[in-house]
Amino acid sequence: MAITLGLVGALGTRVSFADEVDACIAAAEQSQVQRRDAHLRAAHDKLLLCARDACPRAIRKDCKRWLGEVESALPSVVIHAADAAGNDVLGARAILDGAPLEGALNGRPITVDPGEHALRVEAGARVVEQRIIIRQGEHDRLLSLRFPADEGAAAPRSVPVGAWVLGGVALAGITTGAVFWGLGRSEHATLYATCGVTHSCDAAAVDHARAKLVVGDVVFGVGLAAAAVAVWWGVTGWSAPKAPVTVAPVAGGGLLSWQGRF
Image 1 (cartoon, rainbow, N blue to C red):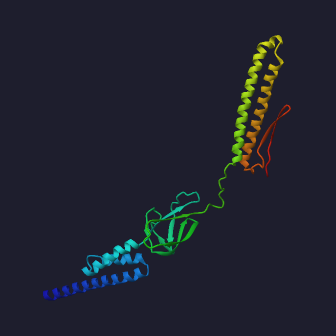
Image 2: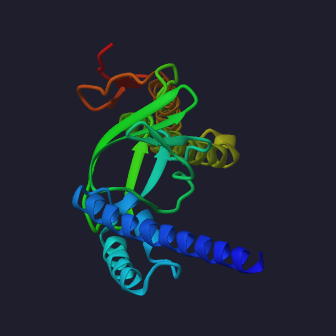
Image 3: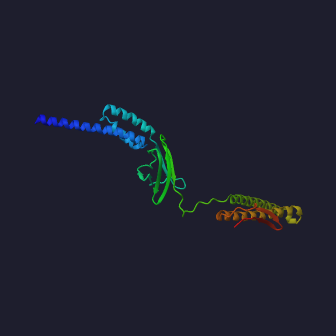
């Protein structure tokens, strides 16, 4: 009985070894067919099987050499999903040729077969698709897919350049008007405290002080008007004026004019 059991065990071991050798040979043969058809990922998996220590030395040697060649030729990509503003989209998933790519959006490279592919990225109800051609030997290629902006979201609107220019004019006008008005008030106070007591002030000096007050009032008022127009222009997005804003003195005040399209 002991001899019989030993013979059965030896026979089972030889059958198991024979099956293992057959699996190694089949994996090696299939890997070459898959390499020829550019199915490098599948060929890589088969070569890992026939490169194991359990396989015969001759087969293992060839499979290790072929495995290095396939790993060098096998392309890899890094997939990036972004919104319309370029920000990362979290929680999205990638699908390549209809098959989900688990962990493809974690910032690490994943291997893909060379050739033409359909790449799809989904984030909730949002979907973006792109057809790509991956070249053999291409490593860590960045594939950035950007979701379009939501139709219901209002696009940010920039303030027209003309509104900024007019705002600068307004600031300059308000500042200049305040300076002129301050100087005129100072000269008027000086005249009032000196020659004004005896009513002997020089007419030219009085006119000079009065002119500064008038100019200060006019320029300050023009600055306030320009500031109001600049704010309105920036808020409403009014079209740029056809001609520059003009400021001109008139009897008893000043005139601010502009042109625009509505």
